[in-house]
Each structure stands twice: as structure tokens, then as C-alpha cells.
Image (cartoon, rainbow, N blue to C red; front, side):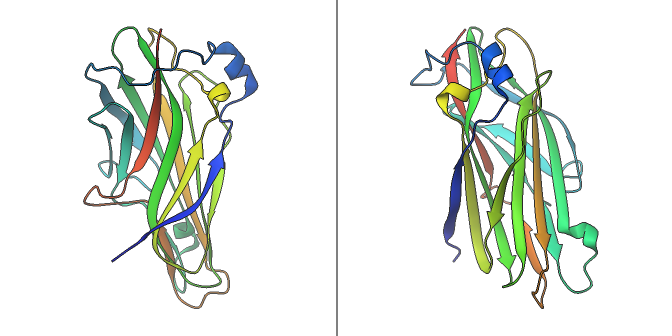
Length: 213
């Protein structure tokens, strides 16, 4: 039975200070999410790690987060494996329909997957996200330590002062970019790292912060 391994957390100031300055003050964050139904649409997907039809998104029943699930997101390296298989990426474009009078920011992201990393190999997970029309944020990079034959999880936490809020009353898509990298290094056998789950049991979770407009 696989055990969940926590491979470290990163405190991240996600977007440039110019964006923070243009956003309203972060005071007034709600303790509880709005009760009204929230809908999320996956508008587009692209990349070597998520060909069409292999990713999906869904809002949690309590409106505290949404998840992204992939079914073919795998990078690998080893004898006879083409070098192009060592880097896979996915770009998701999603639209979150929120109740009138509310807005949201992304306060935390939990990335999960599975790795079979032989001693001597190296692997990492990279990610960023930003609202349409705003400056793209800097990628965060999470090394995944070898050897490993287990699930992995890494997290990004956005400080309250750095939260970037979806503009009230506007429809702006959220762009989510992720990447998996792996290198064989001195390992004799094939290693791989995934961020996929055919049964939905492993998902990337984006945690909302809510407030009234």
C-alpha cells in the first residue's frame, strides 16, 4: 500500500508587486465560502502531458477549492527512452463562475503524484498560474528526491498580503501551467514521475480565499 510522502512546502509570493498593488487590500477575507453553487469550466488544455480529453477540473462540494485531475501526465527517463519524454507540461485554461457579489483568490495549491525514482536520477515539478490579462507569475520549482517508490506531495502557500483577487464583476480565465521534469543521471534503470490518476484519487487542489466585492 502506498504511503503519502510530504516532500516539503514553499511559501510563495506568487505575483509581482505591481499586481498586488493593483488589487484591493486583502482585508475582509471570509471565514466561510459563499453558499451559492459555483461552476468551473475547463475552457482549453494543451501540452505534452495533457492531450485533449485527459484532464478535468471540478469544484469541491463545500466551495473551498477546486481540483485538477490528469490521466496521462507522466515523464520518464532511462535506457532507450527518448529525451523528449523527460519533460512533460500541461496548460489548463479554466473559468470559475462565482456568485454575484463575491470574488476569489488562490491561497494554496497542493500538487500530488507518484514517482518511481531510481538512485542517481533527478526529478522536479514546476508550476505557475495567473488570471487572464495579468502579468504571468514566476514558476515555482519543487525538487522530488530520489530514491522514491511512493506518492509525493508538494505545496505552495500564498501569503495573505500577496493574494491576487479575481477582478469583481469580470469574466477572466485562470491560466494554470504545470511541468514535470526527470533526468536519468547515474541511474541504470528507467525512472518516472507522474501527476495523473485514472480513478480521481490523486488530484492537484487549488484552495480558494473568498471575500465580498
